[in-house]
Length: 181
Ligand code: GDP
Image (cartoon, rainbow, N blue to C red; front, side, top):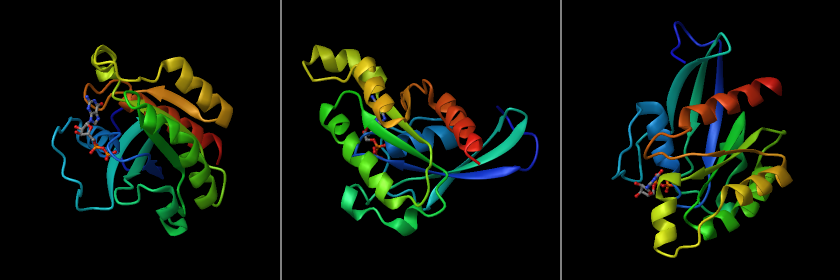
């Protein structure tokens, strides 16, 4: 996935979802290749870049966080203008964050001006066993998949901590975004 020259195409991808589901951690994992356990809420820039090579094309992806916009109603149309794709993140160890996915889908539909691919990401899969042992309500793969199917969204299970499926998620979204051009 390592690019060898300048990008042929740059995509704008916006991460949405409840506070603390791991949006910033996923963006840092993608752009810097590491997990930072103690992220401060502001990264100081609007977006991070990730360059990669997919299907013989050099692609750059702008990864936009929505820190501070973590309420459906505060999402502004201007922020979503020119968005090419959406990553809708929930925490699979927090049923509450999953139950809000429905509202996030509606909010995204309200602020995007055209049909853009949405990928629903179940994050923190590394914690699921521990969380179950603590009797926390976890969200199963099947339940996540079912909701994504209902919305016609893509679905993937990831972990910003271990890096599981994180790069893969972007590759799949890039393919979906290039298919809708
Ligand atoms: P945001 O508010 O959605 O941007 O969430 P953050 O990226 O700030 O993450 C919230 C908390 O969850 C932090 O304490 C992170 O270290 C933790 N976190 C994020 N992703 C993961 C993950 O994949 N696994 C685990 N175990 N913790 C995570």
